Amino acid sequence: MDARRILHEVNEAAARAKRVASGQSGTLRVGFVESVSWHGVVPDSFREFRERQPDAELQLKPASSFEHTEAVHSGRLDAGFVFTIANIGRELAQLPIASLNLMLAAAKGHPLTKFKRLRLRDLNDAAFVWFPRRESPAYYDRLMHECFRGGLKSPHIVQEGVNEATILSLVSCGLGVAFVSSATRWRCPESVALLPVADLKLPLPFALIWRKANASPLLVKFIDDVRLLSGP
Image (cartoon, rainbow, N blue to C red; front, side):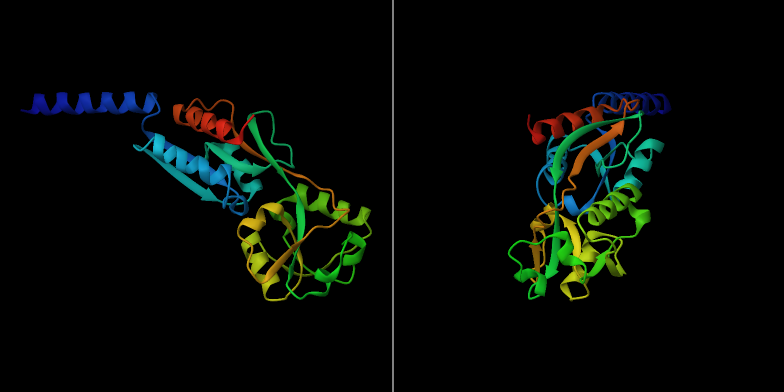
């Protein structure tokens, strides 16, 4: 009886190992930036994974691009959907997905919503909701440089918000205006208007990143799915 049980367990273990090796089961850990998870490649890739690998576990973690890049480097995540403004390093590979633009979020009825053609210099008297520099030092510095170049030399920051959901909430209640990505249109509160700023030229490249040395079959399948979803 014991011999049969042991043989059964050995066979089960071998079968599990085979499923993992073929990418039919196992665990895939993916990080994503919450602000771009409402529409398009990111949610579509998660749905595709669940449909194609029903026996695999998909662990999802929302956080900042900076946190995800560090986690992929260290092996705590298999892949991450991130903004790639900063250099991701030689150990990581990336699959470009899109390039987003920045827009100004303002509560409907705010004086700035009356402008027909908004420019950076028009924002000198505006109260801003901003993000802490620690969340993305490279993006923070480039945005400040772009503002300075366009005549917004010292944005009047009245409040910080650690993520776009918090920032939009603060904008909605009239605390200030904020720069947000164009992907915000997919989940923008009804009380908030998204305004183009004519001379704000700071594209936000968005990509899937992973460690080149990661040979996970599930990761390979996931990358292939994302490549198909993101188009030629």
